[in-house]
Image (cartoon, rainbow, N blue to C red; front, side):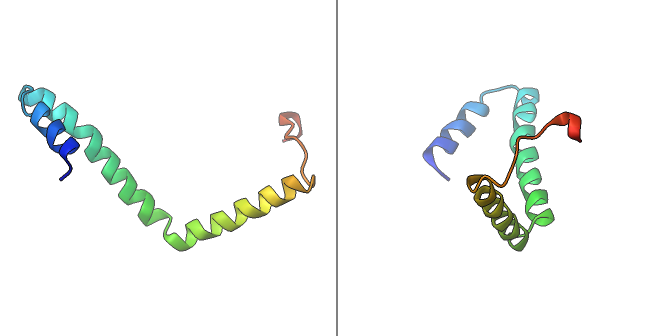
Length: 73
């Protein structure tokens, strides 16, 4: 555990039980969210997104794109 995380836990330990539970919910939610994201989009999918992003940037730099007009949607 890093020193900063240890310091945060020590400070949180001084709060009321209710405040500690409220504080704990945020990082637990974030960790679960990251886990769900990693499950939904494995590395292969992320690699595919990188390829698509590179292609889009290349087309934009080659002036093969045009500004998005919401009226054309």
